[in-house]
Length: 137
Image 1 (cartoon, rainbow, N blue to C red):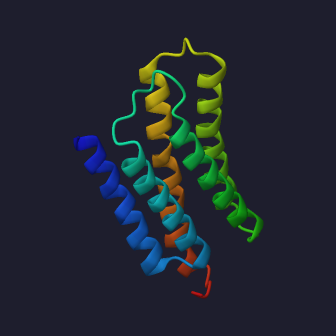
Image 2: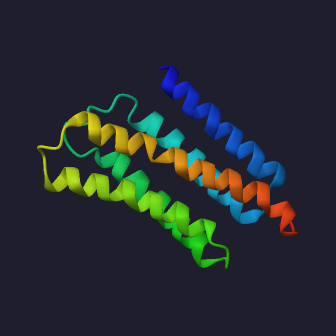
């Protein structure tokens, strides 16, 4: 359970930095990550990973759509990175659906740890928003 606590620590730090230093889109991305994580924890507290985790897949699709919409709203490059990382998570689910022999551990690790690069990119974007002179909206 320490891994869950560590993840939520990084997540809450990302949300705090986005609220403090980020612009509208950085906050939106951080809130998307927060909502997706909370919904995943509440709806699927103990996933088995033996078959495709449908509820997690649906949550991930909504997060992908949110990140994609952010990418369409800006000329900055960071939203494409988080959208791409989220798309990798989606492909992990699709692979498990297509190939049931994929072991539980790799499927679970891909689904869980893909969030860290997304959070780090949001942190970077939030920190650089002030330096770029973007106005908080």
